[in-house]
Amino acid sequence: MVKNPILLAQDKAPPKTSLNRSLTLSLLTLYGLGVTVGAGIYVLIGATAAQAGPYAWIAFLLAANVVGFTAFSYAELATRFPVSAGESAYVDAGFGRADLSTAIGILVALSGLVSASAITVGASGYLGSLTGVEPSALILGIVTTMGLLAWWGITQSVVVAGIVTVIEILGLIVVIGWSLAMTETLAVSPKDLLPPLWGSHWTGIISATVLAFFAFIGFEDMVNVTEEVEEPRRTLPKAIIYTLVIYHTLLSHLHRSDNGSPTRSACRLICAIGPRLY
Image (spheres, rainbow, N blue to C red):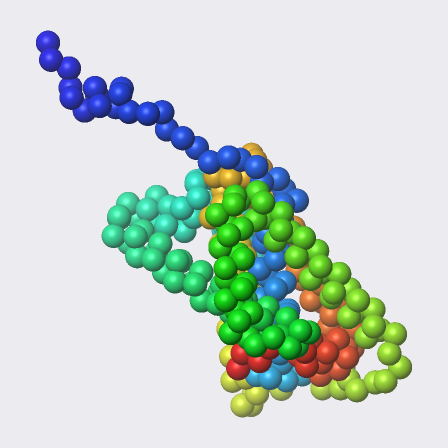
């Protein structure tokens, strides 16, 4: 009796390798925060305030409501399908169509390029304001450094990203404390922070909401490293929730230090020294 050649080939094939599960809950949370804090506060808060003015907090609130559904959906799907393909795997499991899942994978890759570009330009803007180096040289240096870190290994790159994230958060805490210590009051009155039900200002608020939504791309990055996470079915949902809570805590304190207005101290400082992407 002749054995199936396919089975013979499978028997001779090398054992299936798996990625090293080295990301803990704290590392994964810092990984998600690095993108949301870096893109949402340091890079986009100036553009959001430019679109919505004193109603920027409404834009972030609307984006947060939408992102809340997305975040909890990711948390649920990541426990059911703990694979690094992320959205592509979810679409394949739901629809069973390879072409659709491939298209989603391509779109995710393109969105990653856009988000990485935005954060790189933002980082070069801050570094340029501190060092005076040309932005093009800084962008080249940042991309090269990040590429080498990614080549080095996921643990090493996430540890470095975690250190940068801690520095970012400490910077926000310093800015918030500095703002609260100021005696100068430039904020609008609380009643002026509530937008009228009708008016052209809603165009700016909706535009700012789209920008604010972009700040939460960290969730999709988190599910795409699932196969490198320790106990992903338990770790991923917690990390996603922790990222969401910590981000909103920082953002609410930032606006509270401005008496609710993005035109005063803390937000104004970040907008002044940060890059203008609008």
